[in-house]
Length: 563
Image (tube, rainbow, N blue to C red; front, side, top):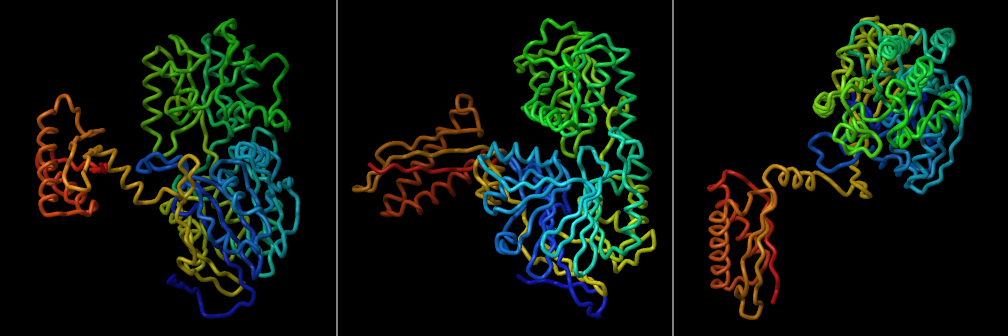
């Protein structure tokens, strides 16, 4: 593979670190980074991303593990920064090919354990605590608590023979977090004073000025809504946002309401958070979703999944009357405590419209402050840069526009342009105390698509066929060929799927059958016995005919049966 180098200078600086992002750059999702020193590799996170609209039938996208499998003997372990899907979702798929130890705080490890059970796997999971220091080969890792939209989030200070690396993980600076445990600013400043060679920092909200609001803002808004409502309340939010779930439960208790939970991921997270002590629910508050009929509407809150309008989520099924236990009725208050992830706006809008049609009052982020981001805006990013004061900077976790803006923020604080590096997945940043350089394209890092049980068996060609099927449909041509006499003994028949409704287009289908029959007769007269050549002739002739008649290009599939 050809590579290109971008040098900051020509000096040599001794021991060198390799930073190889395998996911999370120029995209939102599937975060994974390898840090390599000589013959040892430390991996940070192992996430997935959700499919784009043009990935028909794809369930999820995971990183390409090729580089790690090729260097499996070097890997000392994976450190998880927090439990969101874009940081842990691909762990089961990695463990199917590499049995490596995984280090993380209790909550993300609990979520990973649940995933491994679903996949029938066992992993070497090692719990760590915020503030803990431990060694993985030459890597001396210190974990520090960071505030984010999920509990047990950490950032990482990684000391190596080449210098110290600081990875923020996903973060925002919340001075009044729900759990009362803010960032350790003193320790961050101390690390900065000791010297940080390279910082990698979350860029998701780099284009947003100002500060991200505290989670307590959401609590106040929800409390106002709960106090004035005499209706049944349904609230959809991210199942991973344990602090918000706790706040909803606290407000429900304050307003003398019972709480029911709907949606598989929500039920699993609440159970795990209770078990680990991150959610405290008083006795007799939590009720089974299937036993809510006898509870008066003004005494009930239902916490559900589906804040992103996912078709099979609990809220979507409620909106279409497909939920077994909950039917939306006039007067219900539905709160969407989230903002649509880019690309989900239409699906969320469809669910909101269906809820309104059923007579529900719907409250979403455009109407009230019922959601805040978990990522740092520009002023918080500036504060992190000012505390850490790295020599080199590499923005991570974001689309190119986010990475570019974050690099500009770093430069606005005085960092020279030649010390800021925007990489792509599969690139490598070589860094030591005297220089840093980018080597482009050191490894394959295209996303691997997961479709059902198939991992990586759907590529661009299959996606192209699915796109063509979705756009113009399918025509199947069936004929029985007498091999001995080389003539058509039955057919041809045409079957249409997603192209036209046959009963209303009988003449078009009959004319197409006549054309195929003529093409096959010509092949027989020319003594063409190669079925591939006959199929190509049928496909080309029928394609031209269909396009001239309809201006469409359906997928044409000839099937010949030997008799």
